[in-house]
Length: 318
Image (cartoon, rainbow, N blue to C red):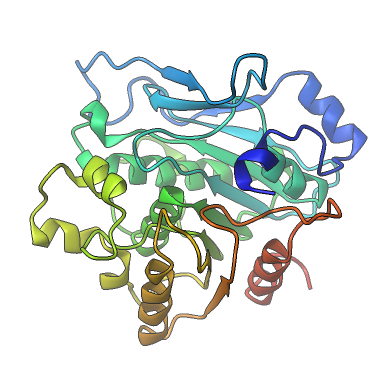
């Protein structure tokens, strides 16, 4: 089962009844910024979406091609265990493939007691003055708002992990590597809180912005049609792993024809060189989009491996 088929499968993950009832009342959505996001004054950007499913398919199977109001959708855990996770979807920085309602991945975590937050982040092609840092601003702000609302969501602010998929893997890597870098002027008390995840998961990630590894669409959308080597190097994760990088789990499929698995190999090598606690999983088959459910309907081993890895570093209570 590929990722697109999985995301279109409504109840495949067997979410607890109480969690379904909560979602039926309407999704909980958290706007990231009070007013216009940083660097958006005078741009006149409007939210725009496209339908991904064919006519008659899932009406919430959408992607956002322009984002004026970045936000998080919350999947509350029915029986919270104190852990939380920020989920960052992909889309090649051309769009953000995230639903209005919690995805099956978010529901899966919520059913296991982990409150999940799915990020709708801004895209550089809309002209934000921060350029390639605009998505990173949103990711940093999201982590801080999660911690700021810890009491409301019954989570431990010290136990917030982050997982990214494809271009979202690049963004979660940037969030982790640049968690301490100021990318916007602080607005409120939330911005005094840390943005660093306790553990990071990078699934089939875009990593490098340098040929021959670079995913050309992501590179072009993030940095422009002909970025300088210096700019491409600055936004290549394998060239910029700091000593403060969180423990990082990297997962890819060897037959991925969209984003080369060599991205993950380069990332793992860089993590090891920087002596960051890290783990690498390369599967033989699965293409771009690690299978998330097995044929028996149970979640695949990749998430079990991430959970075990992150728990060693304090995410869940062992």
